[in-house]
Amino acid sequence: MKIEKLRALPIEAVAERLGLRVTRHKCLCPFHDDHHASMTFLARTNSFRCFACGAHGGTIDLVMRHLDKDFPRACRWLADDANVVIDEYRPRTPVAEKAMRPFDASRYARNFEHPWLSSEAQQFLFAERKINPRVVRWCRLSSWTDRLGIHWLQTPYFDTTGLLIGLQNRNLDYHKGDVTPRFRFPYGARCTIYNLPVVAMLRPEEPLYITEGCSDCWAMLSAGHKAVAIPSATLLSVADKELLSDLANRLGTSFHMFPDRDAPGERLFMQLREVLPTLHHHQLPAGCKDFSDYYVSSINNSSFATEGID
Image 1 (spheres, helix red, strand yellow):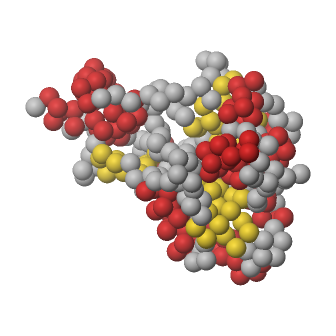
Image 2 (cartoon, rainbow, N blue to C red):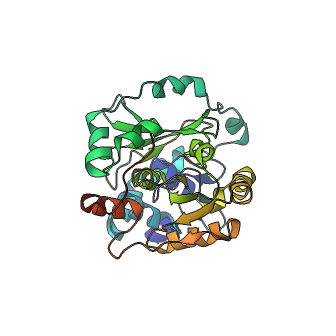
């Protein structure tokens, strides 16, 4: 009976207790590099599902996976906080949502005029990910430290003309199970296709690589290829799809992808292929979970070109 009571706790309340921001029954999925709210909460079944990475389940499953706890510990965590969740939770109303501020690009644009990288950001980008410094400059990556001492990597999103339209904050101190989120986005930020300025540099019939998330995009750029990143094919707007189709029709752009070596990665490839029928599939070597992993494992043996983007 106690377990059933825990399973009956409002799933969105549990999500917010975990630090997830739920709006209109959706939130950023904490289980992959999500740029848009691809996790949906279903009130009828009191469950969650991410339509990008496939994560799904109920209240206990959400706690187990987010906090990296086994079943008994997840139940105890829910039981300890159950009264707080039930008593304090209030769903956001449409009126409150409408009052949210639009993305103020002018507030953040100056952060990327002279980007600054902390030692933690440099460790992450150059030592761990082996990203070419010219790529970091091209992408205008920056960093900051909040009042709690948490170090964040700031990734700007620009449109094809170079106008700032959104940004992503990545928690460089994140460890699995932390309550502090791994990613944060300012209100109103548009983070769909990443690295759109590269589109203006494409030559006729030049290949363009599509990656999953910014990290893979940096690795692909460092390997000498022009690339963009997307969070999920299901989150592409009509305008995004038209932009990609126009490149194929107008420039004869060929599209290429190294899907992650998992079911969500292959599912993303098949979804994209519905938009881009000629999308080329490239298989990652065994032991490499994504292109970033492949790039890091290969950088020392000179198997990649390293021209990057000037």
